[in-house]
Image 1 (cartoon, rainbow, N blue to C red):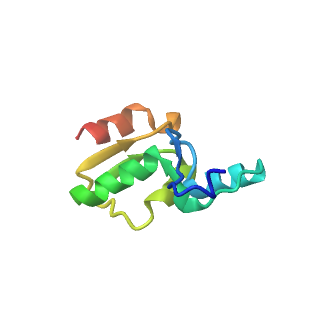
Image 2: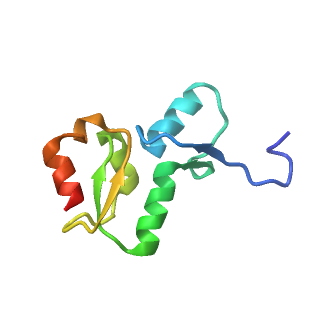
Image 3: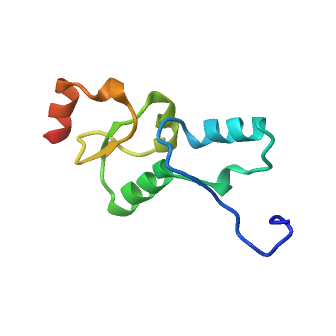
Length: 99
C-alpha cells in the first residue's frame, strides 16, 4: 500500500558496519522490495556532512563501509569519522585521530 500512496519511502538505519550496497543486497535477499536510493544510513548522513563542509576525513570505519565514501578526499585529514570499527581503536590510530 505504501508504494501506491503518494509518499516518499525511506529505510533508515544507524548501522556503520556495512555499505549501503551491502545493506541493499541483504534486504532484497530477505524479500524487501527496495531501491538503493531509498536507504538512508548514518554513513549517508556523514558523507553528506563531509561534502557540505568540504573536509577531508580520517575514516575510522569498517572496511565494508568504505565504498560509501568513494570519491571523498582523505589526504591530510582535517576531520574524523568514527563508526563501529574496533580494529581501528588502538593507540596509534587514536593518536592520529586526535592530531
